[in-house]
Figure 1: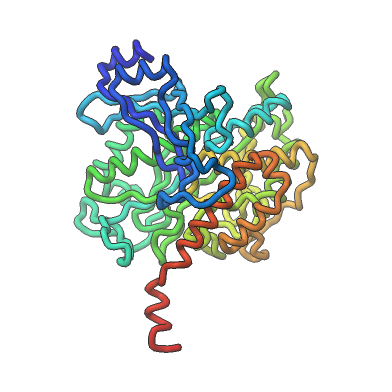
Figure 2: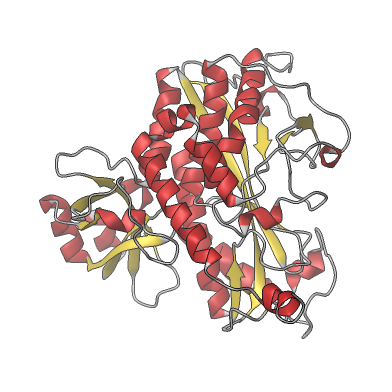
Length: 443
């Protein structure tokens, strides 16, 4: 990395670690100091940083040491990139977390995903994923009590209706998206297509398929990139699952397949293009375990506002072919592209944890040789609401899941439950505008 930093005349290096919420944490160092710390192993942060709530609090949890010892940050040289929105040459690098003895920190998000990938490798399997990430552009809003509004585009007017796949609607913000593409190219973030989604000023970006950890790295950096680019154009980009009452929610759909390490072939289809038993087992694992994995796929109170009947989001884990009303969609493809699309996860997830959870569910189905329910036809919204409706219900299901605790790590799940319960308690302490509007003088 020393030669790369000198080649790009880098002055500073941002050492990034995604916390439980997917927020970038870490340290900023002069380039020379960064190189020195790598050799000395002195690039450290308190372990408690990984167990914070989204508001930056540290809940009481037996899963973390109350003395908050240091952990070491180990930069992954594959992830070093320039930060294109700074005037001075600045690099960023994503770090893994290890203890003093070199053991990985098991509550770190990147470690949790790597743990799942290694379980696949032990079976001779290599998972491949491709996320589709949705977000809204909104007008600058400094008052949290005031509802969000679409921003003003080049026409001088905000969107007032649904413009799904509208070309001119995207072009309203052409200067912003040109900058986003330039920033992504500078960072080697491998995004594919951009399209307008159903909501007002709602956009979807598709990522190319690849290694789950590196794809999660790209999604993690992409969120930061879009926020920074939007701020330069005096608007906000938000990945909230349900930012506006009358608009669709934002998802992170996860396309996933599994390759044979020895042959490189897709294990989900045979040469004639038929589904394999392993593919059906993977779907069955998603059907059985996704409800318990919901705290990683729908991590906040707001997340469950998206998962409503007839809302462009799933309410159950039925599967079907070319059907966007179910939780598990199988797109039309040839044998080499056979995959399942998990449509449950919201855009508000930590991408490492959402991908880890989705792959963990499929893995359990494969190793346990599960059988899926029959694929449905017609609308999934005519079926029962099979997903948890509220965050506390989801937390209870995860707490009862011995299988997911074993796959994701007992200590990590304990910490996640403690953090999410603390966040829910904080939410419960807030009196909403709805309560003041309808209860103040009527009850």
